[in-house]
Length: 209
Image 1 (spheres, one colour):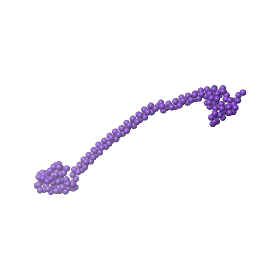
Image 2 (tube, rainbow, N blue to C red):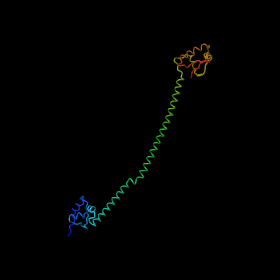
Image 3 (cartoon, rainbow, N blue to C red):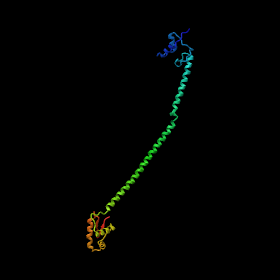
Image 4 (cartoon, one colour):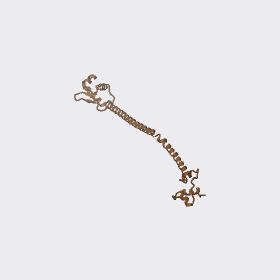
């Protein structure tokens, strides 16, 4: 009866670092390799590497099925979810970029509009300040109370502001001789703050605007 390699001896051959065939290993021990040995051990099927024709066939079939299942699983994994959703992801990315650009443009437009409004407001403020300053400068401030006749002269000069008023006109207003008019002009000039009541070179007086 032939002396076949035991399972333990086959395992020793597998774990050996020496590169020899199973037949050479069996011959070294004075044994033979069993040709038609059947096995249900997956490890034996995969690792036996042709110890027998039946075992080799089982190994190849088993390995092919295992490899095919692994390949199919890898394809399934590789297609979910990234490959399937790649177009959707790209479309969403493009949409997000578009929305960001639109928001940036809106912000720029809002900033420009705000700057325009601020400039208009500043212009209005400056005009108002200039007008206020002009009004302030044009206001007549009295340092002292006026007498009745001084008040009459002042109101006449105010109604004709910026125009030349002659002494004869004031004399007629006060129903006094012309020489008395200069007295009231002098008193008004002293009671009006600033150089508002001025002499005109051609004769007469003017209340500056």
